[in-house]
Image 1 (cartoon, rainbow, N blue to C red):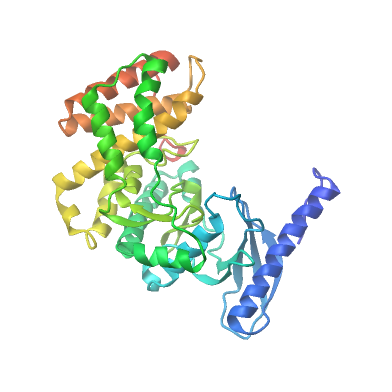
Image 2 (cartoon, helix red, strand yellow):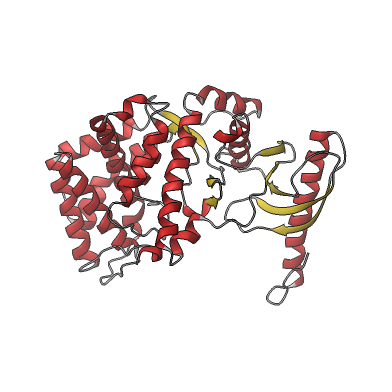
Length: 393
């Protein structure tokens, strides 16, 4: 393996090599235990990632078993601080859940081996396929459109194949000695606190009817309905565009939750990402249709247009409130923000919420969302509108 040392000192290079060597050693150990024979991994290459794991691709030099030519090792060398969710446990259990499914139902790489003591996973290598992020940043509108529809279909297949599997997921967590963390209370907190933030930052008063609807949406998101596995981190760079369709990576926050929380990202794609941009008119509705075509097998009630629209309206309202609660307090009072900014994103998302609320006949939500969008534009604009992803410009 060749390491570029031109801009790093010897200690940094040594630390990087030590992490890679530790990952490969852990990978060889868990494979030997899994298959009962030594398996040599060579030519390690560290792969980029933003999480706590060291991610390494390595070639299988020798093995008496039928293994792929290359494998990916994810090594979590340090346990999390006490009281925090363990990303290794979440990812290991997520991959175990999917590996128990039929191959055509797996929307992720196959898990070959794992060990909770060594904190290591060995999974299929999907190669150097482009990510959804790559497609959106390209100049190929057709390719980006196909990738987005494939992503929506894969998300639907992921939900349909894991519907009613929450007990299995929890049982796998218990086998690793992990206690179930309970429902995420963040949306409830966001809905309780956002009205005060809007009044303080924008001088916008939230009507009681709108606040109550947002709070109900937060409670619905914690309900027992439409529960399925979610990667949670629905970001474009966590999805590979392969010849078999989009495949999901990185389940460090993976859990079972109400699938409508994920479905909101079909209407407001990748809103949690710091560089989220806009999609062309009609793209979101096409993605919803692609997702629904997969999930109606598990949830026939979603074939009803009125029912689906109501669920999506609630989930969109909750997502807009949640991201605004996260983003708005961090923004300074600087005017003249550009079309790639978070300020522009908030303006566009509140306008989208107003438009969808108008279609649903929710006059109070529409008027409030319109006022918020207007005041955001006055404070940070004027004339803000979120730019399209490069593929659609």
